[in-house]
Image: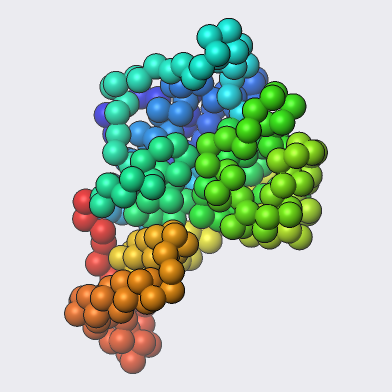
Length: 279
């Protein structure tokens, strides 16, 4: 990896990349640099054929408290979004088809070729909440605290959450979260379907890493990529076109070596040796 990151950490555990937002004194508030580094790191993991998927988490006692307050103050003063391009971190994370639905941040998470799990270890607010919302799964500390934080700042539901959150928790729960901006914990997040796993304190990263490493032993990486592509593309299609596209992709999967290996490994009662995604 050519870049030495300043505001995140990048580690590999088995077949899993762990990306840690690393500004614990600010509860990992996001600067332009941190956002660029996260996108770059996700591109690195997406292109590494040895990696099955990634986990996004935060250092210390928080997942992410949202946009750094200094940046918010500057935006308030200017009355518009501001940003630094950080061109040395330019990356095209995922989205090999250049689908325009997945070009912005954080919706580009949906077009990554590999699974992305948010391991929410503590406070999760604002843009941090949006980041967690656009991950494929959420493994959360039972004492984690979530809050949208948009309405108290005089803002709308930002960063695509108005599209994604109702698809996870339903329109009424989404409006409650947006309107009230009330805090809710990991247990409630699980009850409303936002959290996929509730973990004991300090265990959400380990559980997410274990989940992905277990998948690495049983699932074809190409199958994981295509299923993710199906789910998010087909959320925006009617059933007929979605079925037609799935039938085309099924024919392609039947012709791959992975299908032959999947059948052979089952018959021979051995672990499969599937091909890797080469980018």
